Length: 187
Image 1 (tube, rainbow, N blue to C red):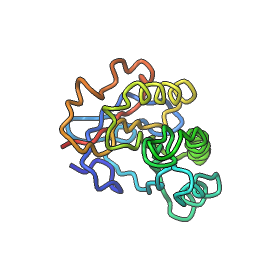
Image 2 (image 1 turned 60 degrees about the vertical axis):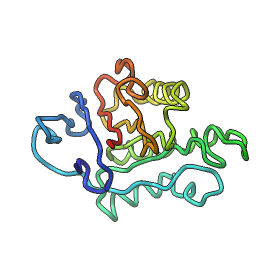
Image 3 (image 1 turned 60 degrees about the horizontal axis):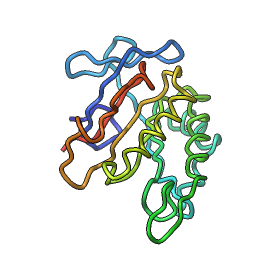
Image 4 (image 1 turned 90 degrees about the vertical axis):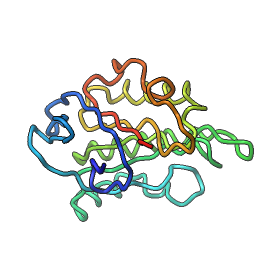
């Protein structure tokens, strides 16, 4: 299933009615509708947010404005690098790097300023190991952007093992983002 054209990932999308700044995303059967009509979103995913990996230089207002005007992007995927070296939570070889969160929030701000839909991605292959951190991250995102219809939450990126989404990763309470879309990887 390919719900958003630029992603070659099979995803499941669950949307609630969004606000008025952008056309609301809704689901009808197996189709995602934009403002109640069939349509498509096109864009690009930024590289992991991890410090020192090279992709962090693109988490800027200039890059997001350029994607909107030059590439005519309507959506951008912004991945929060979680547990790889120099990621948000760090790992055995590197400490946690909170600048990842600042970088992600700056890119979200720039995307919203450019009327782009934003896929906020908790980018780890082991989300089941970091559930409290993922919940805290998405709550922080929702607290800052909760009434903004631009956001699409990608709560699990490419699990490496079979994981029961309904009990392990699925948000227990979507009240933190009641008018948002949630996508996740499907095995």
